[in-house]
Image 1 (cartoon, rainbow, N blue to C red):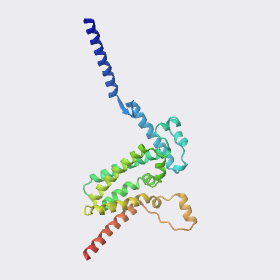
Image 2 (image 1 turned 45 degrees about the vertical axis):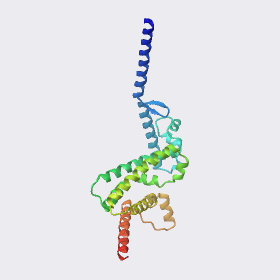
Image 3 (image 1 turned 90 degrees about the horizontal axis):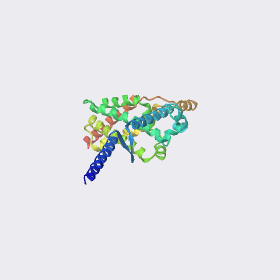
Image 4 (image 1 turned 90 degrees about the vertical axis):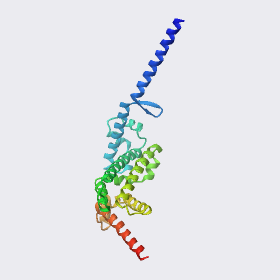
Length: 253
């Protein structure tokens, strides 16, 4: 009888020890999918993903996405090219990762603008222009063919993009409401539509490639460069003038 008690106590302590080991393992690991990955592995994964995105970014500054190959991307990383597919299945997914990084910077800039207590429409336009003037890559990325990116990207990767885009759009809406408090909800939505239509299409006006410049010169077509500051200022003036004319018409009515 006493022997059985000793065995029972031993088994009890053995079970406690096993539970302790499992708990200790869980505290030093993070869940990923259906298994567990050590924290140092998580950091390695993040570092490698960032290295791949940076390699793509270097190539993207020199050539179009279509002409970039996974082989070229792999040549600029410190690990085997085959390892890239552990993080990104296509170069479009890498492009998506770079776009997410740019949208995150855009979101951070909007947060800083929002924290400024005194922003009228002109100050707001200047703050937006100041950010965009230094982010040619951001403008280039958002003007890209999104259908091609969607076709070659997994839904979970697209969901990450949708999330950061939504957060940025939400912050931008708050900034607009703060800079133009007299606008109705419908007018604010109209302003948003005008601005983002302009933003997604401004790239071809402010960043004319050398090949396009050569074509314009060959066709003897005049071209007047436009800066992002001029474009933003014109956009804000246009909206302000339009609202003024609308108010005058309402007064006459």
